[in-house]
Image 1 (tube, rainbow, N blue to C red):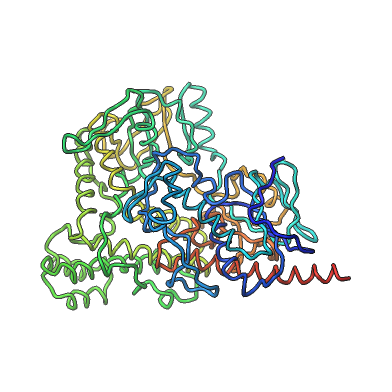
Image 2: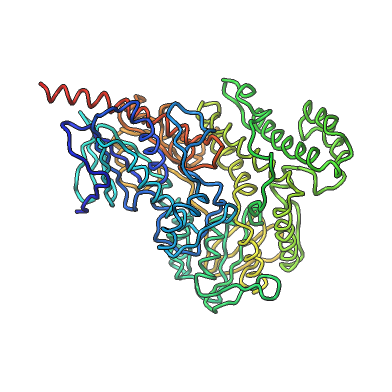
Length: 636
């Protein structure tokens, strides 16, 4: 049996209320920070026992654990990450400021980082994930210390395997220990998923043929040992999972970079495979912006507003998507016209008049752009940004390689150049749009089909492609690996099949196919609680204590990606439609849950902060009632 660690001991009082958190990652840390912030107001001197159950240490949880490669980086700048509220957050509980990651790393965290063998980081640096792990560990300790003296926190480094409810809640751990709980919070983060039928069939066929197939998964946890030196590997996916894969198969196998020649060059160790990478777009995500511009912080949306969306169900394609595109178009051109008027032929008010009364796809607006914005690189055309290779074909792989190199080099130059600050304005508008869409989903304005197909797939894909790409250095490394012959480009709309005991990849942009013994799906599996192997969730769904959306399209086909049902207060909805009064659900596998990662950008009123605060105050109010009842039982 795992020996629990008591992090905040105190003198036991009679009949304490008990809360069990299943999951100890950033979401739980943020929720406990809000719990501590409102405890003085709502808890008084009542006693509470808190148990946090997670096989990984509390703070970072699985994703941000200390035990992972030092080569893996965050794709956020250090100054863009915080777990603390600030003056921008609109919530009932008190604001308790704390340092963002960059401030902490160069202040109170500097000594801890030195002891861990990590360097401090600048505000615009992209730090290693291990630095974030240290930050979250420090935040965890600070949050625990900030709890009132009548609160204990006990961690259990193991899994919860079952939950039953009757007069109370009984949480059974893998060790056999049972925790009796008044309240339970499931904050499980990103769940593993059993393979789909197609993935399982492909895995069986590959195994029979002696091939290596790696299905979607979190790259840091994937066994890459079967990818052999110098052999071709087909890789489908060009986002964060690919970047991690690229790093682990190159530097992670002993290679190194140097810039002595004036550009970055890669020195192979001889242990690297040759990666043939493609995806739906066929290009890597855009590099993160390498500059800031005063006055281009996120601002409230102008067209995609709560008033514009109303209160009735919406069709995403006809009612929401045009407002999203108009919002981004406005952000781009307002910044271009006001910050760089020398590159425009009209005054802003004249151009804005056309934009304000039309849609970006209208002939009138297109004509205005052609006349008022002479340079093509200054124009914003969402479809062209989303699919830069759409409709292109290449006579040979070398032609595709040259086009990819050109696109990547241009992207690196542009993302470092503040004269293209309209890109930063679009980035900030994307964040604002995402916040509004989250509210619309929570309010039930979009159908499950629209949410899954259009928001969580198409829109989130575009958002990630434009706003959540890798640090610029990673694209420089990609180019260096290409020059070294270790990365080749396989094209857009990449299809992979198993034929004659080989994986075969094809793209409509290329006349030739690529054959390989190994195939990697470089992407995270779509969260789907109906396909999770987690015994706790499986048992809760089977017992009816939890219900999940069965996401069925209008044509009767399954959309996948089932999510747990919760009401507007994050309480679990049971299979019979009733609300579980003492079970709360938070995270990416919960319908309507906000801010799944648990931290946000400073000064942005992140939705996760607001939701954490509301749930924490509910817990405190319920604890107060439970404690009073317990006190009355004790007195009788």
